[in-house]
Each structure stands twice: as C-alpha cells, then as structure tokens.
Image 1 (cartoon, rainbow over the protein chains, first blue to last red):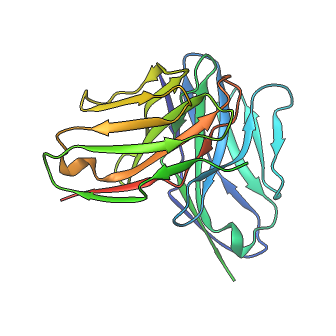
Image 2: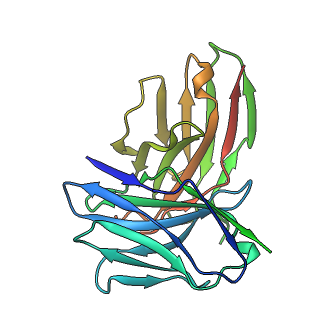
Length: 113
Length: 113
C-alpha cells in the first residue's frame, strides 16, 4: 500500500520570499511522484512530475521538486513566490504499474503582499 | 484541444436517491479515472476505466459504480445516497499509459440533503 504525508496544512508567506512545501511518502513498490495545484473553484492541474532520470524536476512557472529516495521525500520549492501562487498544493504518488493516484491531504499556500 | 468536461457542475439530491455524473475526456484519451474530494478525507481514488473496462478500483462501497462507453466518455453512478457522499467528484483523463499525465476536469459538486 502507499501513503502520502504533507506535513504542513497551511503555509503563509510574503510575496518574493522562498517557500518549501514538504511531502513524504511510503510505498512497498516503486512509484511515480507528482505535484498538483488547485486554484480556488477549479480542478487540479499538474505542476510537475518525476518518472525517472534526474531527481530534480522543474515546472514552467518556477517551481522545482527533488526526489530523495533515501528519505522518501519529494519536497516542492520556489525561490520567490508571487501572489498568484496562492492555491492548494497536492503531492501524489502512483504505483508504477497503475494509473491510480494516491494524494496527500494538501497544503494551502497563502502568499501575502 | 478541449479539456475534460464534467456535467452537471452542481447537483443537489436527497438521501436515498441515486445520481449519475458524466465525464467527457480529452479527445484521443482512453483512460478515465474518478476521484472524490471531501474536506475530511481529501482526494480519494474511486476507479479507473480503460477501453470500456474497469482497470483499477479504490476502496469504496458497491453503491459507487461506473462505466465507460466506446467513445471513452464515462459515467459514475451513486445509488442510495448518504449525507457523507456530499463531495466534489473529479474526473481525470489520460492516454492510457501509466506514465501519461492525468488531466482533471473542473468537477461536479454533489450536495446530499
């Protein structure tokens, strides 16, 4: 079985400050790793994913995440946040043999001016 | 390409009734997955259909069922509704390979009174 833990339910931060959203997972099989973002009253959008290869993956809007196999973590970082980054962020894993996504409970990122 | 569409967007039902939700995937996508999102339980996987066959199933009671048609459109049915079934139901479509990105629709918000 798989599980995902997002250690912070809310992260308040000022605009242009750096941010890290933490994600740890547990799995008895190899998994793919994902970060999704949900803006208010919208569906989920893929932010970035790790399938294989380089452990550092980047999104087009400045977020990055690093897969750490020994610590079973996939933390999301951004060096300088914008007001528009205010949203809920979900970490998810998918067993490599399936399309099934197992989500964490989400982290609400609130960016203040 | 048009995104994933879900109908209806909002629905109000009473306990004991049944409901059918519809999902139209992105053109060319053959996999459709359903998720339930609630404040208490977060995002939970319901089931996945690929080429009209259920390929994966989550841990939900038999009151929750689904099907997929030859054009890849999918429906989800919940019978004998309970108050706890109130949730945002999200549909996601993908190409069918386990490495394909899942694209989410805006969801159907079901309220059970």
